[in-house]
Length: 126
Image (cartoon, rainbow, N blue to C red; front, side):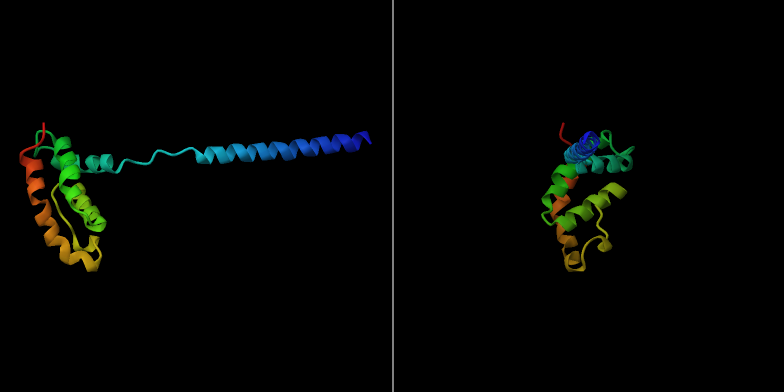
């Protein structure tokens, strides 16, 4: 009888212990992970292309992100524009970067961002 009680106690201990461990693991998965900041990542990619061209490359890149690219409502075109600036340092959109149905909008996108782009590059905010 004693051995049965002892065996049941040990079994209960392992079952409850495993349950508690599973709860702890669930809590650990709920902790939010720090996702990369898309704006910060853009500036990090853009700045090396602006070095030597501008006195304050971080300001120019931040301005391009916040004012020029923000004028583009379409997410595919905006993403392509940010990619082009981040990879080359100048507003660029490769046709391969946008769906075929939106490629005709590339010219209008550049017209929309022309003024804020020039302001970012030649009249930066202090």
